Length: 484
Image 1 (cartoon, rainbow, N blue to C red):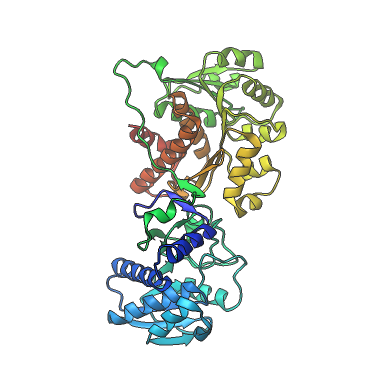
Image 2: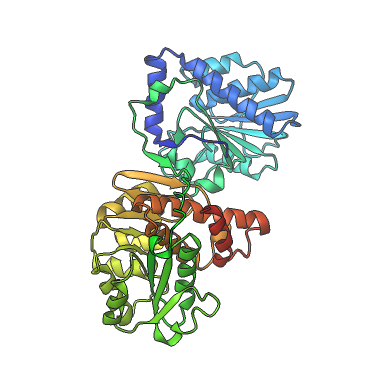
């Protein structure tokens, strides 16, 4: 992924930017289309310099116009080119029709059983305006592209992917890279999009910067911010004290990992409140953790008085013991991170507070919002905003393209990888966020930087040893590296 802009937009907003560029800045629409086609062709040549043949799949809108421009450029460069169209090209309108008429190469109506010989496939079937599931000849063309062995480059967005949500609309092209224009579409950065976009590249197409000034982005991407330099006379009391509450019998590992994660990102002190049955064993291989057996809320209140930040939920369970400790924590007036079973208990409590960070995965988010996991994934942006509006504080909706909502602000983090699909990753994240919060970061910054560094630590671990078999505890040395 190249060095992309921070701002993200909904598809309708990008169409508005396009309109302003054409109508108010006087850039002809065909000129923008030509620039788009040129950018895609340059990327195609850079990615696959040895390609000698190209198959371009064109639909019925402006995306098809880009496709015809690309086909013409490829033909001029001496490549063997064929356009496969799922719509009668003479029925194209405006700039797309002009692009078709400028192209002098082969155009073949697409048929499902065709044998297509090409070194690279170009997806110019459907653009960002898709609002219903893909069907008919378009679906067959997408299936043909996905079944082909050649690499695929998507024009603006992989066909079949919703530009606003990142959802697959029935079926979608699996691209090796996507070149998107004028504004980054928010749907490219969360949910199912990670499986379909490949590398994402951006071309502003010469649209002047002032075109963007009157339009507020729908979301932004997280940018890594270095932590403040520590004073040379700093001591542990300056660096925050985190309390981790959880660890029902049989689930001691969750609080153990959350506690170490908080230490590894720089918290000065970490205390663990857990079941007495294993509290004496928990710090055998991490003696820096201060572990206490806590069986009653009264015992917990004593510990709460000494700390700056609380994490409640890792391995907590939903027993009477868990409920009593949970209620003591949320009544304590401390800044807190709520995760795992803490979120499941919160779903029953229906309480709103300004000073907590919630870190649900889609299943936990569904319980909080009284809907299905499918509903959450249908529009992750809307779900994150609903979580924050309903419960206050900062909401972190985990998953591919984790979303962080605080007030009306939505931020997306694209660090992380499928190797993180293993137990304990969420426990580590809760500890990371709490450790940053304890060191003085705002709730918003602690959540954003915590998510970003947590995912990046996993990326570094995978770069060294691969995705399969990645353990949550494997992130620890990389977390320490990243916060320094």
